Length: 209
Image (tube, helix red, strand yellow):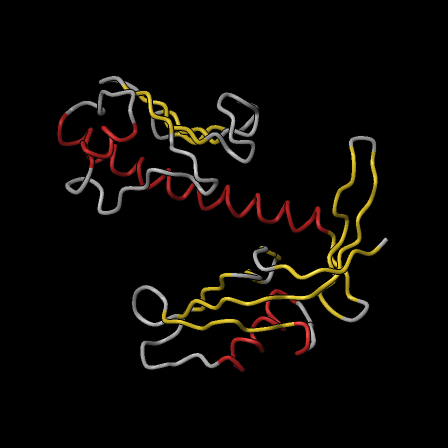
């Protein structure tokens, strides 16, 4: 079954790259100026897509934050295959080109894995800051609030101060002078479930632990 409609905000993540079908950020040098034509070409082919020019409408191109880059607002017309299951309808596939369909489940799983990887990297930044704090002061930061932890660590022990995971939830920190537990609620956004990301005293715990 097909359902054709336009999407203004949608994210596709594959093994070869990331395509934002809505607000798109492209890195480049400060001297570069991204044209609407270049933006359309990028959107047509990024992440393995092979969309036609008629399917991609560039609404606005503006300078991005920092050195170089651009933010592109675009509208994509494509198709989705949906499937009815016991608990209701779900998206099964999305069309990325002529006779080119991609599993939506695989896309969602790839997004989840990438967010987990990046969230873990942010947590390890905090771990490095905690290690530096403990080395100088002889104990870990004693607090149960992530905001207070960042006050302890930044900027002396931590150059950047990540407070949120890639799902937009605050990290959870429970620390005494001798030990600590740092965690992210993970993809489901609920604490103390099997997909939590957890670091205890510098060691990353696996979901089964």
